Image 1 (cartoon, helix red, strand yellow):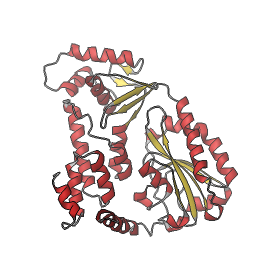
Image 2 (cartoon, rainbow, N blue to C red):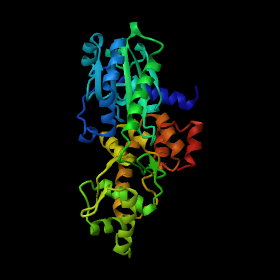
Image 3 (cartoon, rainbow, N blue to C red):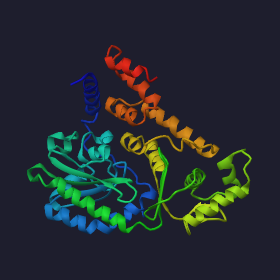
Image 4 (cartoon, rainbow, N blue to C red):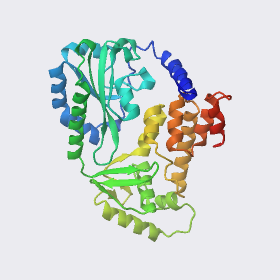
Length: 362
């Protein structure tokens, strides 16, 4: 084990000791936007089939959002009492940050299938459980929606559990495919990508900025307000803005109201999801969404203000991190995050050979 692994192991052990006495997952209120979303509709479309799988195997089954909060669960008679006692119910939050190591949390962190055996569960009250989890990733947009989990008691553990939960994940993904009508996906963290009705759109930088402003103003925005939000005091005519809007409305038919400009289609947006996770203090879901700076080339005063606010809050979160491995992941795909390097240097002993290696990046 090298220096970094030893440091990280010690820090993780310290963090998990704080979670030992937790006997049930915390209950969180679900946001209104969780209801009647594309993911919510897919859950309802597949819940009968998923319940039957859990019934036949005498397991508990659940689906979480991208933060690890359960949106739907069903438990067999043999699992029902235990599931209720540990809050494996709607609203139960199962990130590793909240309850330590568990299958949902591991799949949430890695976006890969996981199996956590009884003794591996950090929470004492589920030490007689074996849990299998798989991520739900949108087959069209590659958007991460959440995690599906199957749980049983250790005496009924099956080596086919991971295959079973991956089959359940496939059912939900197939349902997501049937829901892809008038769905606008906006990826604005890192390299911007826009997908509408399963088709990637080639938009100008300005059109992407307009969409992001409309997302941040869901109740609508007037033409004059939109012009200032987009251009500020720059000398750009309203006619130019109208032309961009006209092209956008052609690309997104019946999706943009014009009396007060607002989006009328369903929107899945990475930067808003990241903001919700950041506001809740959920590390894993925030950093899984954060693929780079929000519209790094924008000069829009409105979008620059949002980016600066988000970035300041993100930096604060980074400086609270105790997990060296998490910091290394951030630095690995976002080497420009000087705050992550600085925080890493605070955690690594100054006499470590790695301290000098990372010091040159600050």
